[in-house]
Image (cartoon, rainbow, N blue to C red):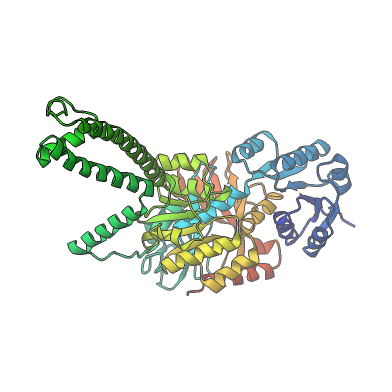
Length: 574
């Protein structure tokens, strides 16, 4: 009996199971899941076609038992970076030729591992998934995005819409690509395209290109506020003043009232005691309370009674106390105002901005993508970290510290004039609540949700007509699984009844097409420039090539059809 190549997956969470499922869906290898003994995990691994070995993963003897000596790949994808690295290095100790694909949160470390450990690929789940969330925030029709060629490269994405929604109806494919600055891959289900073909308005078009350009091509409609009359604006300003007065610190109001009462009584007293008119008496009281006077009007010069000396001393002490409290209150108010302007809840007037709710691992990456593309970003986060606060202080973004699930918080974000809302908290139900609340504030608003559970993500898209809902595991697992056999794998996309593996390849001195059949070229990175490619014959030496490969040639078509059926239901018009 011929022994098939062995791939070992190390992990005990949903990502590990999804990677196993992706691996077993293709032919030509056996898959083993290694993790601590867990009957339920073992049953789930078996149900997707993988074997399960319940042993401590970070152990030489466990690795020998599972068959690392003759395995072709090992894939440590546990949640702990240190454990993944330890398992990978121990596997390499036992089998120097084994291919390593590991999960690492730290992208900088991941890159250094790839550069220094031969035949190794490292993937950050948060960074990989964040690219698609950012792409969908810019373009509601985006279903997958990635950076090419490196971590610092431009964000590219796949977008599927009608030609009319791309604003390219009635023009040829060649002209449409020039307008979009993107590569058109499929038209009405066909990938073998003639550049002279004239696009019809309702033809489904799949395009791939820089998200900065693709996002600008989406037709947006934001509400225009009606002009208010001068009387209406004045009344609104007066009501705002009254609300501000009601919100003023009660102690400050009491001190101000007490100071005013003392001043009024003192004015009338010194009019009698020093024989002054009301203006001079007011002048004397103010200089006494502020302790800046005495040289022109005093109880001595004006020959006031003895009680006037005691009254003057009382006014001076009262003035010092009231002034001190007043200055302290004003300072506190200024500090509060500064804090509110920096990170507090306040009504924003931004337009064409993107609201990001949740700034965890994935949210932080999405914010980085959007800021790099010079987009206006509003961040809603209950517990912002120091880096986020520093960015708000530098005016790179607007930060609201509050609960994004609260409708009151969302109202501060000026949703009527926003481009989209991206909900990226760690709770699926909280993200759904944010999405529904945002849609209630603006029915035409683009909404992108992070949903951990894949089935729940599809249900949310179908039942609530949310623009996009993605599972980070769904976005990342295919890329990790593909890397076990194809080092240049960047992800997976599905359109028009077919799934495609997205691959990258560095050409040598003599460029050659990818070895698989029916590959479709997308772009090359040449001399620090991104260039669309329509034929592999256009390649030049040392190009960085990005392409897609249809996966039906490696497995049955049933899986691709089912995936496309799920996506079609999400893309159906509402």
